[in-house]
Image 1 (cartoon, rainbow, N blue to C red):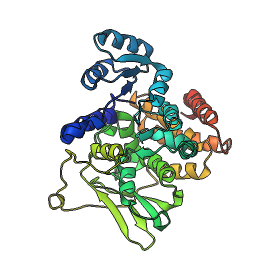
Image 2: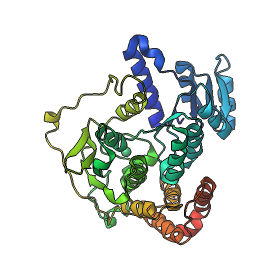
Image 3: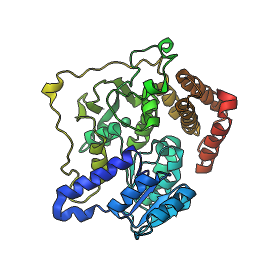
Image 4: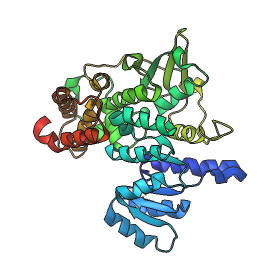
Length: 389
Ligand code: MG
């Protein structure tokens, strides 16, 4: 899901590479369905290459365009949320990679989990907005949630073979983004192009802006609390400009484990895909080898929480719980969209999201259901410009 985006296209590359490296076992990785919003050209290429049984195009008129383009193939084209839910719960689906962008990814994750599918989760909003509900559903059905994010993948690798109660704290690394070292006054005039210039990772636009504001790390903090069942007080964030150490885990004896590699999302995608396979957790990959002598230095620093307020705002939101993380996320989604369209300034992202969270703090709903979460997020989005900008 989200096959035409950054994680989606890389996931298909991983599947292609694994198939070519596995020889006779290559049949273990088949693409049963693809799903994207409206990128018909790329979807056509993907369908022709991977020959899925179904292809879901969220946008109905784009689905019609694709039907015409692909009428010489046997792939069935579906559309809308019904199409997404259909492939997420189909009996032939074993594994769902959810790389949809934004809150739209929440319901398909739940559908897949309820249908006992393993979910490789690249959609941050799923756990940020509804972590408690998603986790409870996964526990009920026994479905696995496997993170596709370099930080969580690193933590996950570090805790292999360890006892849960021996874990003392998680340390998330952050590159700091393109504006690391700047103060608030230095950020007044930054442009969209400036914000999209990430120093180490090549990613989609939304997440690249989230890296520039450090909201990405805030969302990852919330996700880490849900994925690894830790308190927000036991998650630290450190700046590590080189993006070589992807995160660390400290144990009760003060031993620290880290996971290192060159920054390449394909490694996390592959780990999440292969982890569940019986007989092994790793497969050979085409990722480049890390040469530490070439790197020479790895650097670390404390984050500047005064300028980049989002990691601490996220910590506050997850501590308060209820709908507050979903509200924060919805506000950020809208604010980043407005910034990308040059309707608001970079600093307005911080101010408007902070204002939204402060406003909703007083009308928080404890133990919300999924409708409470989605309705609150929609309320935020509907009234965002008039109330918080
Ligand atoms: Mg990440």
